[in-house]
Every structure is written in C-alpha cells, then in structure tokens.
Image 1 (tube, one colour):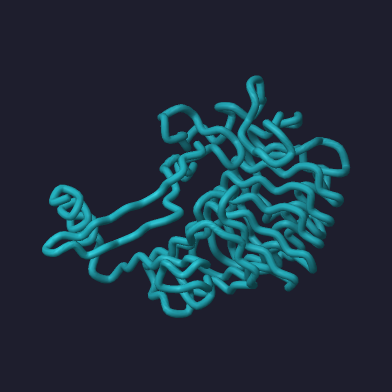
Image 2: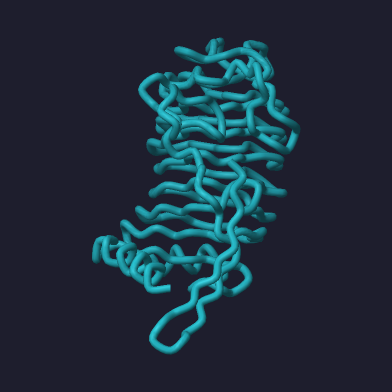
Length: 279
C-alpha cells in the first residue's frame, strides 16, 4: 500500500501548478456530474477527464482545455440541441458524439481528435468560421454531410479521418472554397462522398474501410486504412498511423477506469479501481 501511495504522490506533484485534472462522473464519483460545469470551472491548460456514461447535454468548449472521454464505446455525448458541441478552442478526444436535432459539432477553432461522430440529424461536423483541425475521427451515418465547411471564413484541415455512409457528402465544401485541406482520409469518389470535384486529397483512399461491424470501428484484416495515414504521424506502436479512430498518436490504448473507491485506513489510503481495456 505504501508503494501505491507513493505512486499517487509522484503523479500529483509532476503536474504543473497551473494545470489541473478534473474528473466528471455522471454517477457522482468525480468533482462534477456535468461536463459543462467542469468546463465552466476550468482554467486554460486544464484537462477534464470524463468517465463512462451517457451524457445528455449540449456543451460549449470556449477555452483552451483538453476534454477527454473514456473511449467512444464508453462515453456518449448526445443532445436534442443543435449542435451538441459548440467549439471555439481546446481539444476534444475519445468521445461518441451525436445530436437528434442538428449538427454533432459546430467548430470555429479547436482540435477534434479520435472521436466518433454519428447519427446526427444534420452534419457530423460543421464549420463556417475560424480555423479547425480534425484528426483520426470516424464520421458516419449522419443525415446530412459528414464534414461540412460552408464559408470562405472557415479554414479546416482534416487528416486520417474516415467519413462514410452519410446521407449527404462525406466531405462537403460549400461554394467550393479552397480552404478545406484534406489528406490521408477515407471516402468515396462518388458524388455522395466528395463535393466540388475533390478526389480526397493527397494519400486518400476510395474504398470500404472494412470496419469490424457497424458499431465496432476497429479495422478488420485487409482494411485499406491500415498503415496508410499521414506518414509523419505514428501509431503508439511506432508504425505509420492508421486512418480512423484507432490510429494516430492519440489512439486511446490505456485501460479506462470506470469505478474507483478511496478508503482511509489509519495512516494509509486504500485505493480500489476497476478498469477496462478495449484496445
């Protein structure tokens, strides 16, 4: 138990004084049960870790924080609002995001890494202003386009992302503006996936990514998205990055803690945790 306590102390004191890690747990084990409450109380540079659960709320990420879910299978962010996520700063990763009434994410500035955005009533990701960056996402089964940039005021860069089976275009550039920078992505060369005559950009693949299933976004054996992502990005094992959720340097490979009990025991502290590793 002393070794465990020492490890906890080391982790705490290696965090810079100006940065805080905040836990959101819908079941009450963290500092907050609401993601938006955690964002409102965060300072720039903080990390907000969201434990597993279905969070029915619309959120606004308007400061430079890292919002980290517990994997798309475990952390679902959904709402009946358009959009579910409004983003003008920061980084969001490791979530499943949907909206029953509108866009999944409306982004003006910020970074979206390793998220699954699916089954939105409108677009998966929508940009009409600012500069945004999307990496290693899966955008599927949305009622309009997968990723939609509709203004010359929007600069959007998309890398290692799979956008498939949306009712509109996988990648849509309203007005054919040249500010949609797309490379090493997966779509189809047909009109249902690319717009304005773009062929997908450098290194892109026009073939079925071969997911394990319609709900499991691991790549099956023989997928054309294995090791065909941006060559300057690596997967955690050091290989060239895969396209999609399970690729790139932010691929979630650590076990997800979904239950923790901390009990004082004299001069010691007993910590019991349950974790699940899916990667």
